[in-house]
Image (cartoon, rainbow, N blue to C red; front, side, top):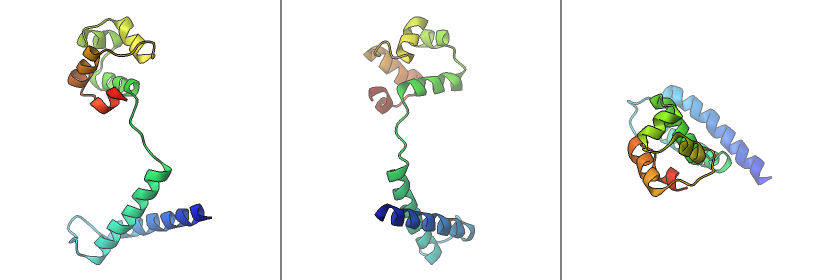
Length: 120
């Protein structure tokens, strides 16, 4: 029963937040009562969503593939950039091989992949 009350509170907060966003702008002072209320209801929404819809870190494979897409790289291009072979890249992406410290450093430096993602 508590979950449905929590959900109702969330729905009310989302609806109120939508109303307030129409009235409050970047030029609204922080001490304005509607701005204060907007911050309060957005906190409720944020806490509910963190508990019910958590978003974890992307996997290393997802980040490598994203960077390859963003940089227009094929596996062979990535292999050259990381000073390894295309088959080794395939092994990393398919989970058949753990990345080495050298490759981890290269992923961080050359593809700007966060170390938390590399180490997970």
